[in-house]
Image (cartoon, rainbow, N blue to C red; front, side, top):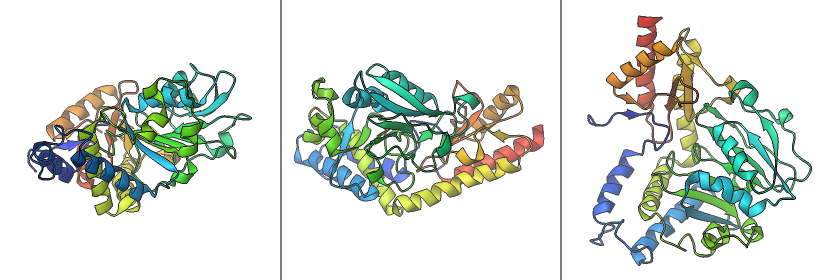
Length: 362
């Protein structure tokens, strides 16, 4: 539509237009009830149907087994940074962390409040421009869990497959910026968490997929709201949940399903990213910042020859209705965030701009 522009924002990010439209209707009148979704009691049958649908679709898309709980929580991934170690790490134990960017650094910082942290691998030596290889990971002797961040929005790197911790060690993943962007084998994980605002819905909802035995194993002397067992037992309804956000997530799950599921979504995302990376490979003006084997399909980070030219490029992008391309303040440059709902045509429009800008300024 003429009044919509291409939104490259890193988050909150673009949503499918079909979902925005259906959410508009639900705000006014949920399923013919005469009451909007934000006005319904979370204990009522109308919203119970929404919550059940959200969980069922989530389970179906990712083939989540019955021995895992699916939770819709609040507080973002930042709350999970401390909730995970608070639940599983003690002062005399060690947790292993793979540090590949700013968000994993924050997770490490929070974990140190509760016990010992072993950094099993890091890419900090080259400004987080790559993902460590298997040979570069040094696990500790008996970690209580192993944690990694699957996609690094600030630096534009992504794990192509999950790391393999020692046998019996639960794998914990912050998947906030690539959750459901491709197929995932949930059985390889003990716990997965993700803020919804990049690939799953609006800000304010955090998806947690956690193995039931870990829920039972977690510390039981914590405040009620900080225990996974509280939310698992009450099916995310111990307190008033983010009802509208859960509705939007259900709609997004349905959209992913209608689009062919996670396998088809992965193919789409690879094709979109290829439009940008193929041009950047050919360019003698722009350059990518991530190592080729570590490049993210969600966040394409790139630089121009000078900061002055970058500012000029961003100004030109704004004129062409390409929004949200400014890189994170800590690294500069440009960042094109192309999550699930971002259209391929937007990537093609960005390449057209880059080609014109390179011709005029190269």
